[in-house]
Image (cartoon, rainbow, N blue to C red; front, side, top):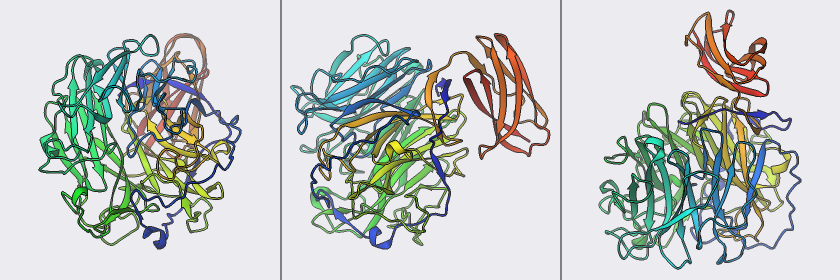
Length: 618
């Protein structure tokens, strides 16, 4: 994975960790089902809600806006990347010409040059109406965006690339589906290989004209030369062809790539949750069913009645550890078909976790029940790692009667990152009690981390502070990389109205903000980003160790140096002050006499810079 060293300024307003005993949602809400495409909310008048004053939010920065507030129907595409040199690129679907957005919808883009973000964009990247952008690095120093065309003069996808990120003109070209099926939509993209030179692309055919026997087929394409040629192109995997699935919904698939490893995660309420994995850059693939659907080959065009069952809700995410093992998080919901339509259960939710070293979930109707059913195969704080929190600690979950419509679980939109020390960080959006506008409860962002995938931290309320009390916080996109800190970086969308204007409950249109956030997952403190380039810190040697170990640091300028060690709860257990050191290479000896065996983190501070690494005391 990528490496980057970034430092921050601490703030007083911080996230809160929740570790109280879990409170489950009431049986009445668990059983409350709503027919799909029949909103249980009424279109509401403008509430004249003003966004709270945001001057206290030093730990994050707004980087753009949009009135088009639907960023995805299910899973969030990769929309942010942190480069080796500390620069960052990010994208979102942007539009201001509501309600139809016919003239201006397209990709909003912003870039952090190591010092500051660019001005907020006011015009899309693409030449024509588009949306659903995915973003990835390309080549030694470039960047790549893909989006789908809609209401444009041509069909298919638009690619835009720059050889040098952040500067210059975009080079644009059209990519279409197979003959007679050119209008492919909802792309997902990742780059891998040497210097991110290999492009891996997913998209689906439109459902009005079946392709190769599927209502809507997932197509895979690969380019080894930056998009000039493609092989394969618009390929249907035999593992997911019409002998296995009748079709797929848009936005119910994710793709990640790192070097020669590529992972594709697919799943929704009416198909399996499955993984396709390649270890040779897309030449060969292996299929793993993570959750087996109880009604295989169920067909929307010929609905047959089913029992009610718990399911993956279509929002999910994947990443690799340093050994190439795939880690997965997914949202949970409940569904049923009565022969005339399908139903979802708005108040049901949870975040499931799985990795390749674990067995799959069965097709039992209650295998994914997050509420302790005897047949549930989820284990709390092991394979069930996220749920709605009891904010006021009164032992019950209390919500208003109306919530924003996303057709996802109460806790959903998960994102996962596994860094190069195999630490896992998960972010998700959850309907949150006590935060409401008098009519609906808001969704807030929550996070958890794990050092091993078996034990998980307390819950981090990432949008707890005053500036987000009256905000709907949704569609997080988490950057995949690691740095010298225990920090992770994401973008998300917020506005003062629960739900969306474009889809679902059809709220009045508001200005939605796209925000960038940095999170320190050990202390749970969000911080403001500033560049640092004057400090390199080695991994301690030996490691593990029992008495003394050596850390080597390299300074590009003279400054004061100190080192501190914290335990897993964030408590400082040892501090060393080296004083003022000249530029150059220096060695720091750490004597851990008196410390109990276990995992610790050491942070070297050089002026305003700091780098954190882990060490093991035997």
